[in-house]
Image 1 (cartoon, one colour):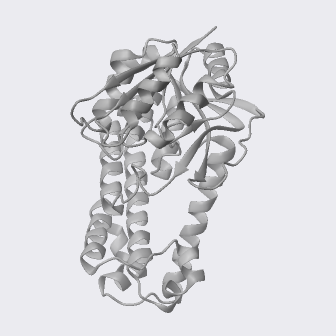
Image 2 (cartoon, one colour):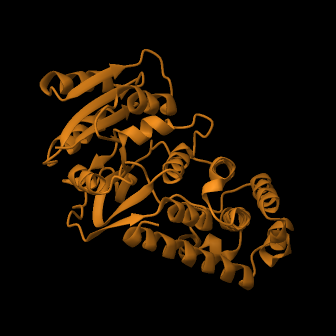
Image 3 (cartoon, one colour):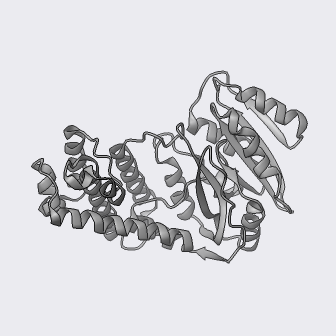
Length: 355
């Protein structure tokens, strides 16, 4: 029977902790599970909730921080210092594993020693509404070459993984190290790309491997779009520097990812900072995922980032429209809608093939 070390970091999520722990201990047949809850000096009752769970459940251990150490240090403490099972996973206290998810992941990892980590779909749900029934019928498995998976990341300039749906091989985790503290907003993306540079990637088709809860205090809430783009660029440049010798056509990959990041910065500037009738209308905001609340300074910074990534972006009409502070015209809106469609298509592909 394979063993899984489950690390549950918790900061002010005491109200979610019981459900998170239950999700990895119940309805997980055929797997030897141990759980570590790390409370990062929460101001709520998280420590008390964790102690109650550990008192009645011998498979659960608790560590309490007297001072807040932050996400990255807490993640690494659990994964690098404590995890000793065959496989390991990081589950935020506000997320849930789905029934049978650990067994499904272990089965693939057991059968394919060349795979470094496995994931499936993470279904999103909103706190305060009934949890949707997860898909638990496995439709198939895929083993994707690490280099191929990495090259898809460069072409898309995005990360298809949320995090709770991932189960990794503990020996590889310990060999390659933990989350990079220099990339606080994109450390997960860098870690998965680091894994893929050294091992193949497994994907479970047709199943929800985790449930990701949306609420007002998610760690990702309020992430600045420009800061996210800057961090992602740093990840790709770091991967190319460290592991470019494992990839083919490195120069093309670099050009591709910088061009994609430039397009995304341009699209974000148009989405957030246009004041046309379209973005003032409810259908337009839905179509473009627009808030229309950005400032001129933020627009200027996004355009500067786009031009720095890929100078050719300055030649495009949308860039000139935004640079001049004008409202979007019909051609600009068509471009925005087209990019929105491509974004949607990528996410649909992630659901079915994992990349």
